Amino acid sequence: MKLVLASNNAKKLVELQALLAPLALDIVAQGTLGVEEAEEPHHTFIENALAKARHAAARTGCAAIADDSGLCVAALGGAPGVASAHYAHIDVGPVDPAPGGREAQRHAQDAANNALLLRELAGAADRRARYVSVLVALRSADDPEPLVAVGRWEGEVLVAPRGAGGFGYDPLMFIPALGRSVAELDAATKNAHSHRAVAADQMLALMRASWRLG
Image 1 (spheres, rainbow, N blue to C red):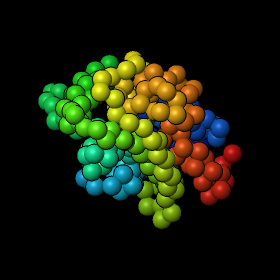
Image 2 (cartoon, one colour; image 1 turned 180 degrees about the vertical axis):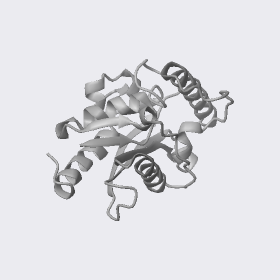
Image 3 (tube, rainbow, N blue to C red; image 1 turned 90 degrees about the vertical axis):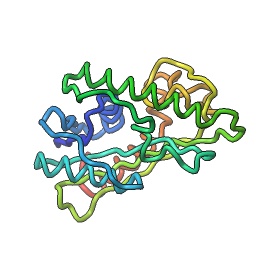
Image 4 (tube, one colour; image 1 turned 90 degrees about the horizontal axis):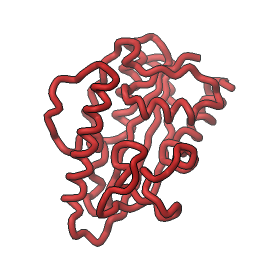
């Protein structure tokens, strides 16, 4: 079954391909099909994920899956939350459609986001945080029964980045249960414990039960 990922984030595509591998889905990024990024105007992860999945399904005529995820920090009232990807507003110039250019722009945005988060938490005693991932899958743009899965991963924000792996806030997100930042984890460990892994496990079960896959 072909499944369009409502994102052009190459690293997110790789993660979801691995996490949903048991169903042998053909997961392709919407950008490879000429689909632009959807608007994300909502205040909750679930509303944005549904909007993105509907957008991808409508543009391609295929089943679609969307992930809306972010970091929620206790001391910041849940921020950056749904604004996690663009927490720091920087001018990265026109969007370069080439994979290398797009990834370079994402790297610059990630660095700015992390720097802002550290400034916002300077001197804070409470550094508790959680990663949240909401996955929504649709058989078509007007599917009345979207599949919804939610995963959470508890941790705390470090005072300085650690590790070179992952993306987003991974260098700052420390997982006490593992004794490492997310950016210090290998892909297999991350895919076994992450918020997206928890959501993906739920989604696999939903797809098997509702879509009769696998």
